Amino acid sequence: MSREAKVERNTKETKIQVYLNLDGNGAAELHTGIGFFDHMLDGFARHGLFDLKVLVDGDLEVDCHHTIEDTGIVLGQAIREAVGDKKGIKRFGSCMLPMDEALIACAIDLSGRPYYVSDTKFTVPRIGDMDTEMVQEFFYALSYSGQMNLHFKLLAGSNNHHICEAMFKAFAKALDAAVTYDARITDVLSTKGSL
Image 1 (cartoon, rainbow, N blue to C red):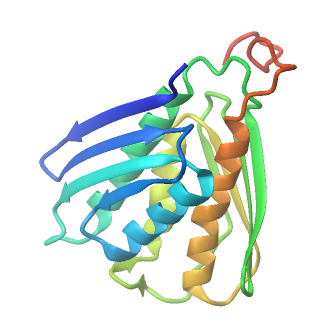
Image 2 (cartoon, rainbow, N blue to C red; image 1 turned 120 degrees about the vertical axis):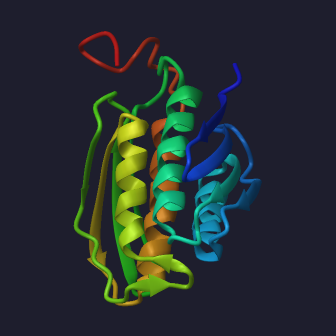
């Protein structure tokens, strides 16, 4: 069964197209207009082994906010659609990921209940052409539209680039674990019988 999704969202602020294949090999085509954000999404695709295409026409003449937040909304929808009925998947995933001096823990539950928690802090206002406050906005939007619990814990780190990149890569590895099939799980992994 193919676990792919194509989602399009058009507003007065952004026009976004996302294609996601959960069972890909890490191929990515990314055009958000924000170089550092493309770099982060590339890390997500490659380390999660997801095929990902993200095309965004956003109001960057205003700032990067709408482009990044709305991409989070659309990518979350794509994840939710690609996962499907969740039968046979592990549902939970986690990763503790080092990147030089930075160490990030990420945990996911594809529970159908959105919740976002993170204690990560940045000490600079921008990394490249991306506002650092948008990291939280992206993952918050993604967790709610994707209907998942998503937690980040900063265990160590001083370099803002490393912290941010470790977050995207840890999220990729945790999501990859959560969507992995387990032959012992014959239905949905829940005492409720559905997610």
